[in-house]
Image 1 (cartoon, rainbow, N blue to C red):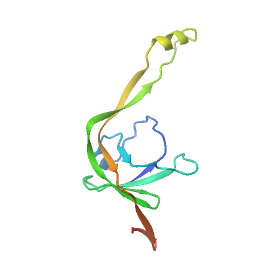
Image 2 (cartoon, helix red, strand yellow):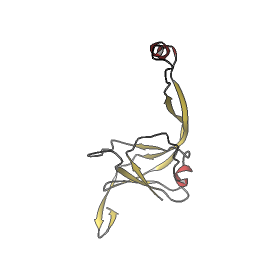
Image 3 (cartoon, helix red, strand yellow):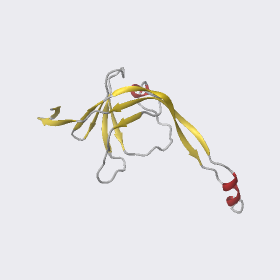
Image 4 (cartoon, rainbow, N blue to C red):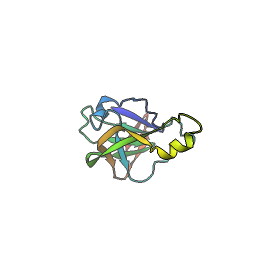
Length: 138
């Protein structure tokens, strides 16, 4: 299975991940750990930054293709689960009370997902070269 990883920000619409990726973590989010930086040139809006490939069972090593580089990773259980939180905005009831209520009322947070596993890509990327119409690793 190939999953495009793009640079869109989370919008809270509740879109779930494909079932293969959902088996790794939760149906909403997956944690991907990279060593170094992932730089995207130009306009980042909706641009595909990488392609994540998993087998149908989700048990083999995942691979991540970034441009002409291939990273091989592994699936790791987190020692402590992580919660993905979203800050809830509160609408003031009255404009006069806005300054009073914002200082008196603490912000609230909603738990959007619990992450229990992550995909770790810690090895150096392998360069890929074009051989005809396909890409192969060196």
